Image (cartoon, rainbow, N blue to C red; front, top):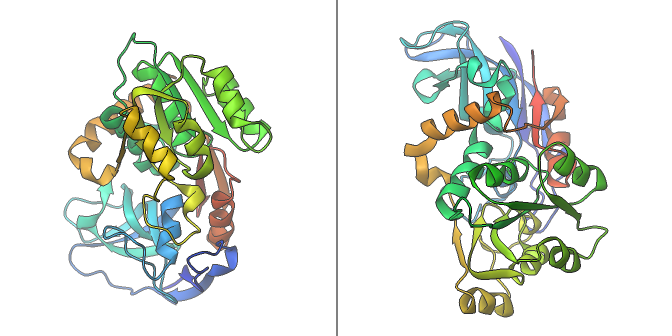
Length: 347
């Protein structure tokens, strides 16, 4: 059987910006017969995420992320439907998700690696399993629970950078739900600022491309910053940290401003920023959601409940077609998305 797949065509270089042409779509053959334990799946949705940028390098710089190989099929988070099964616990018509889903229209996968999902958890929006009711949702929820130290009624202020992205757009809402009295988002367009405040419940938003972030933070966070959900790193984070309170907390989710640079993760801070962390006793520990697998199930149920109750609003940006995986990736890396960037492969 002939299928379409996307392979890594070229690497952008450690200091280069990824472009759509780094990816290439081609045809491939799928075996007709399944081995015991295997399933044939039709791909419905695929995810593109900032962490994938380091997979484009020969050396990802981490031991838990493996690089994509040139001329080989690319993979990441995916959701699909089973068309044929030789696995005892999976049947035709079941919906499944997998963190290493190949970027192809159909695939043969080991059934034991797949997680069966219940469409009722997302009211039928299967793509949400790649976003708010999936890894980005868990990253935001568990990051805040484990590293945010939010106490209901203690009048805490949270700042979120990359606030209109997959994690940021959820983190601000979860901050409120967990007890923050004020949540301010930082993002890169007026449209994003407007959506954060009018749709997603942020108290205020700053357009870092137009406004003076330090001045705006001073105005919008008069009591200083108690919790900082950091998706971007770089200058913006240095500015936020300079206005953080004694005994406050940085949730180190991502550092997208640094991903096209050859620096370690997390990137080193300027000496003056390190000094602020020390003198104010600000925690800034690396957060890795993969270390909290025992909390995934309860976390997904909580996120689903908030969504169904209308307390967690979900935004996503959907591009159609496997041939547009590279376009979607480039757009996500340059802030073209609001909420989770998704590619719809088939209905």
